[in-house]
Each structure stands twice: as C-alpha cells, then as structure tokens.
Image (cartoon, rainbow, N blue to C red; front, side, top):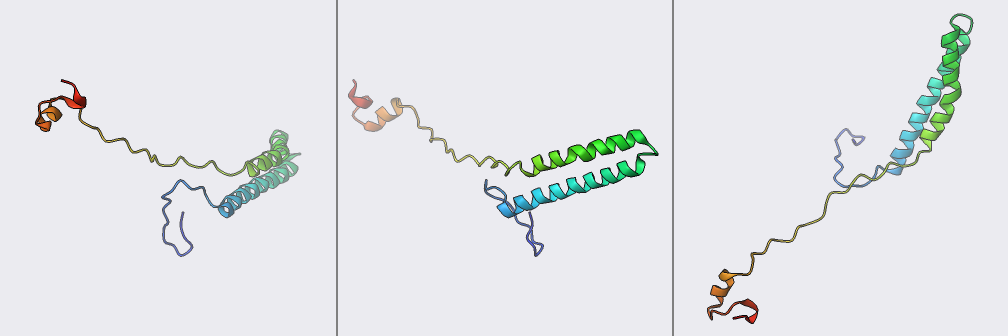
Length: 114
C-alpha cells in the first residue's frame, strides 16, 4: 500500500481493504479478462483458415472467458484478515504452601487448617 505522494503506508490493523480499492481491483481484473477475450476472438477469426486447431481453442476461450470474468468480478469483498490475538494469559501465582505459612508468623496453615 502506498500513498499518492510516494510515502509508504503500513497496515497495522486487521481492517479490510477499502471499498473503493476493492471495486477498482475487481474492475481492473474484469477489463483485463475482456481484453484477453477480445484478442482471442480476433485471433480465432484471423487463424480460422490458417491454423484451425489454434483458432478453435481461441474461440473456446473467447466464449468461456466472459462467464469466468463475471464470476470473478462479482465474487465479493476479500475476507477480513485474522486479527492479532488479544488474549493475555493470567499471571502465574505461586502455589500455596510452606512459604505463605511461615509468612503468617502464627504457624497456622492457610485457610485456618491446623
């Protein structure tokens, strides 16, 4: 990701790509697919009497590519990337034992047991 002025911007959150950027990317992929389709149909017409096998493959590509391009363009937004873990483990507490009993000074065990 980069700003228009040339400085680099780093993504630090789990936020998705902006809607305008997502639409622009899908439009770009669609235009590229339709350009390839147009070129394959032109190649099929030019090669029909010269190399029929290549022309048939190009024609098949020209027929199938619009469907594929529309499916890709309408696929929807990207899935949200996984967010960083916010789990903070609980601090480890020392086991109740002789150290606390001696700290009481009265010689009693914790919880009033003798």
